[in-house]
Image: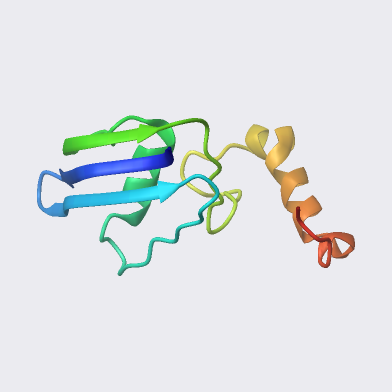
Amino acid sequence: MSTIVLDKISFSYPTHQVLRGISLHIGAGECACLVGSNGCGKTTLLHWITSGQPPADTQASGAISRDRAIGYVPQRLPRPGDPGFSPETWQNGIGELGRGILHPAFWNTPIE
């Protein structure tokens, strides 16, 4: 059984179409990478997959199904000054998460 299935996903913003008829099957244990130019809909599609809801302010069609919770690793952690980022968010965990990931003791740690 697959972990993530996208069936004819399409969405557009009020001014332009972003994705048209995307279908994808990612099996259990597989990794996938989305590559594309700026503004082509990669991040919007990932938000839809991880949240299970079409993005706000878009016309969306198609179906996404997931067998279980999935992990998502962003390209970068939010930083102070980013839109919607508060000092409380940093103090309540993201700052510590970034320090742990960047600590030299973890650089050569095998992942099982």
